[in-house]
Image 1 (spheres, rainbow, N blue to C red):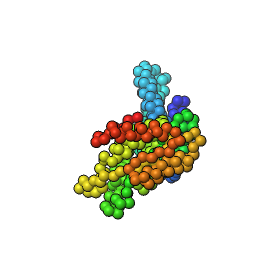
Image 2: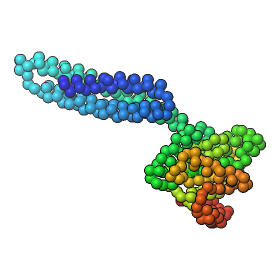
Image 3: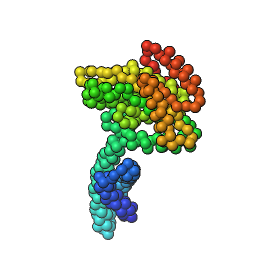
Image 4: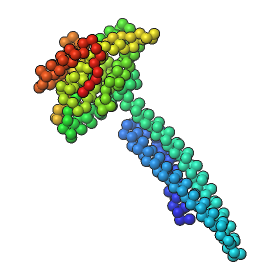
Length: 314
């Protein structure tokens, strides 16, 4: 009976806490609160699963004890004791089965709440039109990348990308066409970047890409491959399979040990401005060294890719 008492004393508060968590989930606000609540839900799911397994095991043990008691040859003095024991064992097993049913319901509710909370958290970090991360998520991610880069003493690259003549697309074909192009560009980036890289919609027709563990030369090669593939891709702009050819202007900067988020973005933005001023559909970069090497790398890439789709390589 001591084991049963411990199980019940632990299980009932757990079931009650499951219901309370459901109420908390409905009122959780903000990314931090949602993350904390989701972690609590996952722990509760693990606890509920463990408890359910222990209750099931306890029922098996009790059933075994019941069979042993039934097989005892009672004397006149122990007959009533045997009947009482069997009755109590049966009652405990029924109670445990009810508790296990309650745990199944609680686990089901917790799983669905966790899934819903996770979906809400993803939606809060995603741009609904392009299908990539939104500006708020980018701001937080860039700070994290800068922090990690300082700890590991490794560079990464920030690439600002602007869809050329986007205002003309909206004015000529309508804002719905512009929205379709933005959605297509988001898909274009998602399909071409590694899982370790990152893309977000920076605003309007502007996107930002973070490329992990690269120097300026490698980053420039990747950025130029993106530009070349972009100008060879037609993006859907309307019904009946209507498509538009678009080009990208790109501004590139690599991280420094003493960078703030503002510093890095400003360098990439100045490079993007130069690309636009220089005629668009081109890559410009901000660097104090290896400029000639970058130029030669991009020139070689353009020479080798003339008339062909360029594969994304490191």
